[in-house]
Length: 68
Image (cartoon, rainbow, N blue to C red; front, top):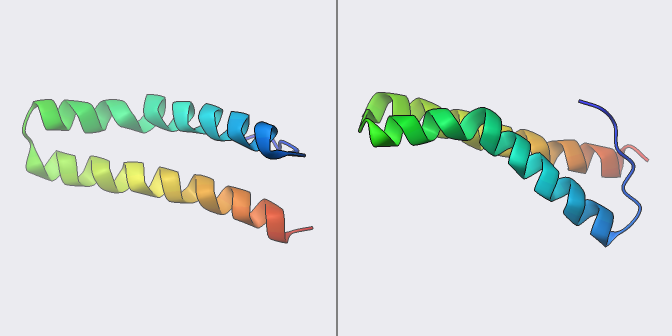
């Protein structure tokens, strides 16, 4: 993932929207398919993966804030 400099609130909002879109594209499909198939095991795994992707994105921002 490339490094992005965020200088103000609107840039952060744009980053958050773009990052959320990336997460939904990469992780959301398997979550939706598991829900559609009513596969509890796959749904649990997909939910955990989706949650980890969201957590990783939040930590990515936090790490960028405290690094300076």
